[in-house]
Image 1: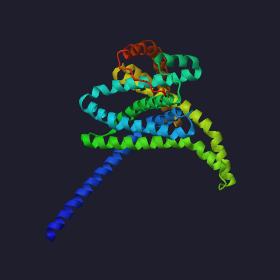
Image 2: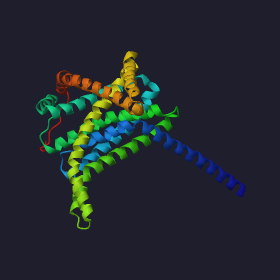
Image 3: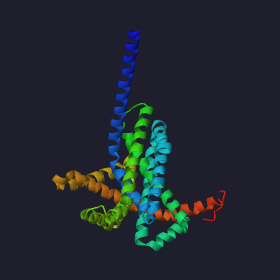
Image 4: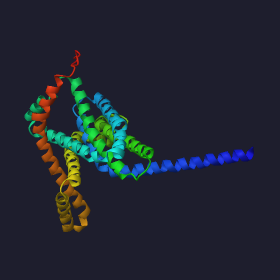
Length: 332
C-alpha cells in the first residue's frame, strides 16, 4: 500500500512538472509574441485617450472601462477563434482582411486630420454618414463604439502578429497563448489609458492636499498644467499612429500581392538612408519605412473619404430603409 502511494505521488509530481513546464512555455511564447506586437500596442495606447477627451471627469473611467470591455470581447470572442479558424482553413484570407482593416484605420486617421484642419467639412461629412449626435448620452455611445471599432482593427493586427510569431503547436496551445496575450495587452493598454486620463485629477488632489509638502503641491500643479499639453500630443500621436499603422498594413499586403518592385524600392530607399549614417542605421531604416507607410496611409485615407461619402454612405442609407427601425427613447 505504501509503495503504491509513493508511486502515485511520483506520478502526480511528474504530471505537475509537465504542467508547470507547459505553463512556462506558454508564458514564454506569449511574452515573445506579444513583444513583436509592441508597436501596435503603443499605437493603441496613444489612440484611446482621444476618445475620452471632452467628457466630464466622472465619466472618464466608465468610458475607459466600456472600451476595455469591448476590446476584450473583440479579442477573446471574435478575433481569437477567427484567427485560429482562418489560419488552419483559410490562411490566404488573413492578409486581405487585414488590408481592409488597414484601409479603415487610414480613413479614421485622415478623417481626424480633416476635422482638425477643416472642421466644417468634417462635420458635413459626418452628417452625410448620419453619425452626428446632439445629446450627451448618444455622443458618449458613439465615442465608445468608434473606439471599439478602431481597437478591433488594432487588436486584429496584434493577434495576427502574435499568431505569426508562434511555432507550429497544437491548436489548444496556440489558443492559450493568444488568450494570455489578449488579456495581458488589454490590461496593460487600458491600465495606462486610465492613468493618463485621471492624472489631472491626481494632480489637483495633490496640489490641494494639506498633508503634501510644498514640493508635492508644486508637483501636483505641474501635473495639472502639463496634462492638456500631454493629451494634445497623444491626440496627434494617436492620429498619426492610425495612419502609419494602416499604411503599414496596406504596404505589407502590397508586398504579398503586388509587384516585387514596390517592396524592393521601399527597402532600397531605407537602406540607402541607413548607409549614409551608419551609427544610426537601424533607427533611420525604420524611420524611412515608417514614413513611407505614413504617406501610403494618407493617400489611402484621402481616397477613402470621398468613396465612403459618395458610395458607401448612400448605399447604407438605402439599405436602412429595409431594416426594422428602432423606437427612440425620450432621452434620444
